[in-house]
Image (cartoon, each protein chain N blue to C red):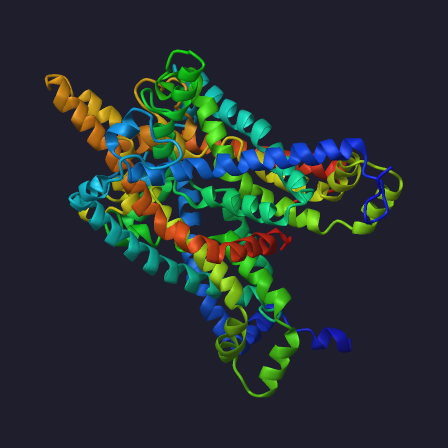
Length: 302
Length: 311
């Protein structure tokens, strides 16, 4: 009879479980990685080979034609610039608003904090809906301006509660007493003590917001009409979901041109996914642990 | 006598507090303004659902129509289909998508290869950060009739290629399973962290008693993370009618429309495309009221039977 180091017998059922578990995890790893990997290799492969389904694990007929094609597609770069603007400005506004909400609500000497909390939490469960919100944005004259991408989503109650929980649980209240004794005002205490101590949570929340802005497609669909102000995601949608369009417009075009056109449209898809997703996926490994931390703080009941 | 004399009125105390902490009040002002303007004013705008909205007359001035919009929706030719699609997608999504992250977290918890564990965790979170537009683009690539991987596999087994996105009967599977691919890693984080908090002494005792890993999962791990599971269940119940607009909207085309239209896409179509404001608001209101009822019901049930509640 074999005994494990810990001194307990490993049962037959556990052995099977370990093997099955290992296999399932390896398969899952493959399922998560392969689709992303495929897009990468397809973007560097000969479009014809991809079209024929020959590209599976490695690029075939290495070429940069997909990226060259993309460089000529000027609208994408306008979208890119717009998205960077919306992400940077939007995230700064989000962070400022979130701190403005979270800090007073974390202070026990802020009298109306319970009422305000309830008012804000109601908005998590009930909203006016698409049209009433649209009418407000439209009345304010924000429709089809850059502000429509930033102001209607200026903060999220959920992120504010996460930040508030952090302020309350991770910063000792003795610091506030000490600061008050030294004659610091609430504002000085916030700037000099609270914010520097809250860098981890501000990073997490900031990244949540930034990814949200980068991936935002909905706001532009509803509020923006001008091509010059559309974000990257709107142009992405035109390219990625366009096979139907090209196919529909093909009547009257001869077969060879049609096939070439369809292949070109297909080719562009891979490079455009890479170019638009790489910024997010590149910083992802470095910030991954912070994201996880954010989820855990958020799961603590406020 | 003395105590009552010391007690100031509420107003006086508030004024004193405001004077002392004026900075806090100043900070909260933009936040309150934001929520009043972008959440509470639209809530008031819900009145539109009971009015025949005329832009010139405004919300208050437009004539009342009572429940006309609701009646029109309930008797619309596509009412049943919209409701069934919406409920169908979310119930299917919940039945398939709710347990998977839990099972994934449990299995990952028992994985002994540390490096593989790290690797699986890291790649499983990644799809969550990919935009819906790109996810839908990838779906259309992998589902494509001529070179998509699913049809390549079908061809390998000698089956006819299928244009998945053009077939209404495939829509719900595509929608739900792509959602699981994208979200399961991320949803599992919360369970993984809950599992990390399970008292190891219980496991040691069970090992001594000869419990297998599967028995330990069922009798130790699952009961320990029950509060987390219930909390997330309540939250998901609220989203039962809130099928994400973006993904359905992006995946729908003229061929799969019978399966790929849900309440939220209908609200968008009649509201912003056809500018039928009152009607669209009514449909949206119907949706949010049911969601609210569902989340409150789930909360009460959970409070009664499991002693866990969100509010």
